[in-house]
Image (tube, rainbow, N blue to C red; front, top):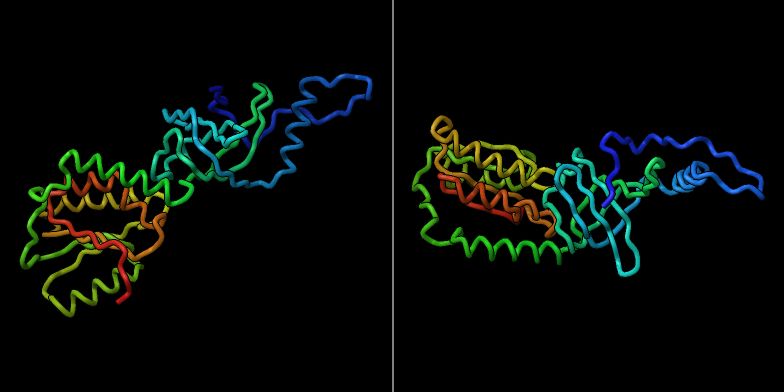
Length: 259
């Protein structure tokens, strides 16, 4: 698949101002390119498009095609944007992208410049989740003998969640009522959206690595309820791997209700 030059800035057009030739003169290539650019500029600055990914290349920037039953459009997503995508897509995935159309005259390429990308609907998320579960179950990650015993009276529990969440409020209240001698260490992370899975996984790794200095005997990962898309960060491989490698007992409380 053709690629745009790495230094290309989609906000800058290299086409010359349009000059309308007499009707009996053919257009030059540059005039035609200018007409294409000007036509594209009449579109909204941000477009949302749903389609199926194909021909995906993810070495640095992501290059792929977005298609449906009748049409196909080339797409590019710069590395500065791909870092915010929690789940790397695969060929055949149905996704929703937002961005704008740009035409690069020197190569005659018209592509959709993707600013955001997410799975289109819970069906794709569910299928990806079930496939990951099957893989990890086969690898033995869910075996009962891998589970660590919970401490009877922990010195301190690290609570990995959003510092502004209702879940944290209830955890603090319940801990004070039932076991006020146990200290809590709040580890503030995003629990939804861009970078949430990365932050959760990194928090688990750091607390585990520094457990002796922090005096932490267990980890609680929690957040409130929501749609499958809202909870998707906790279904990601990197979070499962952080939990699997964690040497501290860890409890997940996902889908909390304010009670």
